[in-house]
Length: 141
Ligand code: MN
Image (cartoon, rainbow, N blue to C red; front, side, top):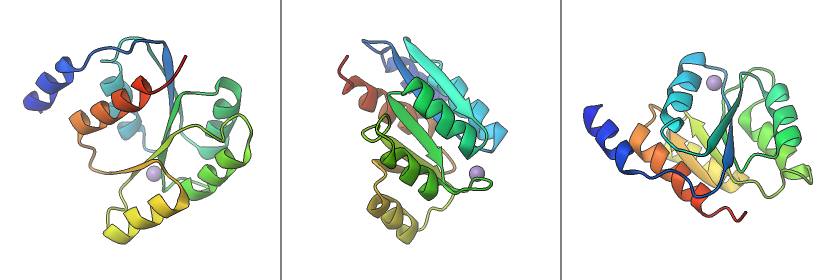
């Protein structure tokens, strides 16, 4: 964990103001990732504990990046991704799956479904922070 924190401090803040939406029904994971991403300057974090609220936030705020759990109540991450891709406002938004389904076939399924990346739980915090910072650095403002 200490090693992870040291690496996190090497990652610079973002050049532009960016926003990230995380849709996740597990409050502990939500807290972990929210706290983790608070290390990035200029980042606004939005979150939803359930998919319908997450889709509403996505349409309303048009975040630069969406982190999406797969196992969600009512609608799974694949259905959420489909809704995001069908909406004009979120069609192009990068979406990263964060899932406990970590078998190679799960990852393959995720990539085939159109996730931009597929990150498995337990979350490698330094790796996730790097991935998010990298994706957001590609955002043109
Ligand atoms: Mn879940």
